[in-house]
Amino acid sequence: MPLSRTDSGQAPGAEAPESIGTVDQAREHLGDSDSNARRRAARAFVDFGGDPAVLCRRLEDEDNLAVIELAMTALVDAATGSDGDSAARRDTVEALISLMRSKNASVRVQTVSALQQVPDETAAFVPALMSDPDPNVRILTANLLQDFAHPDTHAWLRALLRTDTHVNVCMAAVEALAETGTPDMVEDLDRLVDRFPDQPFVAAAVAQVRRLIEGRSEPDGS
Image (cartoon, rainbow, N blue to C red; front, side):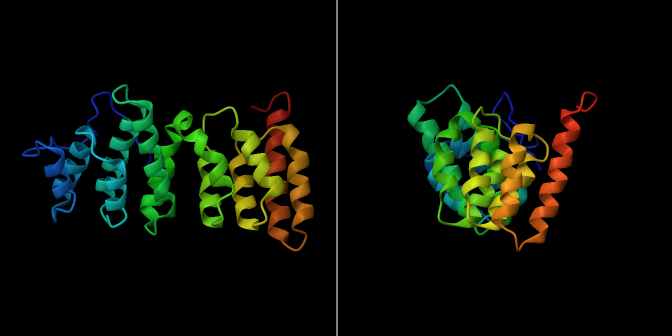
């Protein structure tokens, strides 16, 4: 479910942080047995300037999707808001990026959605993510780049196609280019087939994306 930022900082359906008047109280309620209380606490914790790394660590054990979504929305607001300095916003994005290693699939999905909303703040971290030793992180990075409003997005995806040694990372990059790839990328796609000659699904996926790119490049294709 895509996240949506709000002008008021209050996510749709979220209740006001009743009885939470300090960051310490908010931190305490992050572990409340009531999911509604955890939602209020997550919003209040961010609003009171709590350490985003603390909230992100708490999300590792969160099993309620509504709490995860509310926390992510609050973190996105903190990463892009006018309040606070650039270092604080960077710390928020860095804390979010740490969740790309989460064992919680819902957290990973929501993290990618959150980071896609803050491309300018996230861009500085992308090169390191592309060279992360964990292929799962690199796959998520390709997923992130699938809808990432930054001028270097295509260059990063092409770099993955050309250099990554893990076939699943490359396939994630191919998928990311399905909607936005351009004719100048066809050569990189063809070379990918040559790099993985024993993987027939690579050739099939590349052929499909090639057709999509060529269809968009035709005069009546858009």
